[in-house]
Image (cartoon, rainbow, N blue to C red):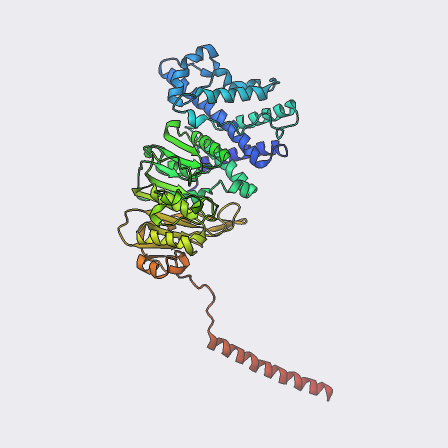
Length: 520
């Protein structure tokens, strides 16, 4: 059943965002424009979040007409210390989004005003627990960029348009909305630009339906977990999906991720805030996960979900330290320097809790290639760490038509076998892309949990059989494809042909007779 209120709110929000995009079209490149909108959206969000929090406290204390936005900065300063401890940041009333917006049209130095406010918000967290969560968050919002305009006046004109556009988004009291409005705005922008920007956007974004499938598999059978981790977290969509599926309060110790791209790392932290996940419930790090992992003190993780970059280069055996790294050494060999896919698998396995599940999107080549990759697959199968391999349909992801797979890892399995699911046809076609429906996702998750054979769809395979197949993990090796070609009855076809030939002979004789009569 479709929730009409939810769909109406969502459609209205998307129309507003599309309107802002049209308003600024041509002045800012699509992918950069997304960053400007998201940071402005974030600025509005934390302004309203802080104001609502303070107002609620004062109303509860017996001041029904209290409005933090109308307070003087001097009086508001008294709340700074308490707010930084509680919320992780502080904003003076004069710096709030709503108050800056009121003056924006007449502020000839709007670019400098905004830059000063962003620096002030960031510095309010300095020396506090939340410092790392706010540091550099506004770096991708360059108020002096030529992309906004060639003159200060032009830039400010566009900044006013941007503020008005973000202000016109009907986000209301985000607790009251049927949709997670701030989060939905974020996801719509990400999807909008990922689908248009190809690799420049798509490599950082996992479509919502794939996120849903991965997370439901990784959380199957669980109602709450200790921590959720993504070693290549991009903009954080998989971590957020875990918060939505389990409920963020059911992830006791929070959300952990690492991202190598600085812009995407900033977007991920913004995404956490926009989905109302407080600074003390997430830890997102910026470094190369394979060579500079940042969460040694936080592992193991009960849920790991990831869509790491496909077949990227890494140091591999060119770095003599890596073969002794406890994450990689158990396999006795490193993933090839030109293909880091199985290095992400080994890293995730190493940091997976004994009662945990990891669900990771993989490039199909890692399932069957020889050499070092075959040796790593041998290690995984011989130690019974691979729980399931799922073949996904082609054309699910932005920027690539490749039919990817999901590898599911577990450390304490009850049987010495691996489940293979052929979900290559579980999708609907929408324009040029395929999409997983709720029915497709449920069918895959049900098969994953039930672990029983189903002709042409899934099969539980003893690990001894996988060893006999040289540790090939391609689903097509174990699940027979249904032959949907039309069955032709040769005997019947021959009889039909004979009848046609016979009829042809009769007609030819008849034609010859008629011609003879005419000529005679």
